[in-house]
Length: 198
Image (cartoon, rainbow, N blue to C red; front, side, top):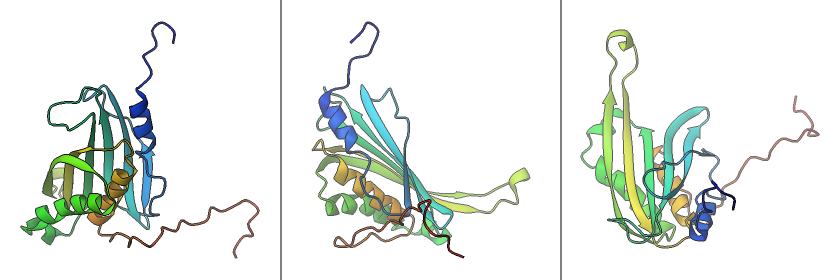
């Protein structure tokens, strides 16, 4: 290490960061590395995602990993995951009194289905209706749901948590999860020497 260089992140953080981005995702999901917030913990990493059907973006989200070797108040251990998901929904869903509990169950059931070990989970579900006025009076009314949650993973391997977050994204977008014994299929990339289809 030379003068002025920050110290290398702890090994536990580096190992966990390698598992934050799922190795396999459904073809409807596009992942990207995004900047992580710098002030919430000494070390952090983040991944963003969008869920598409054809060319329509149905949901967006991000999953942030925070790491503080000393832990923080409300955490149970040195790690904390923060998830955000926003999706367009049908207008009648925003007035359904069960929408909040159902959306919250998407998260906890996805974590449990993937065998993710966690503690101290908490969050909010928000339903929003947006109407345009003035210069935006012709804009269509939009209705959406937002889920914000955080929990403490009890293992360094975050792959099951990331997979659960992907399932949550799909559920919010109205796409049911795959059964446990069904694998995702990805379209074969086109090669230059592939014959052109007329």
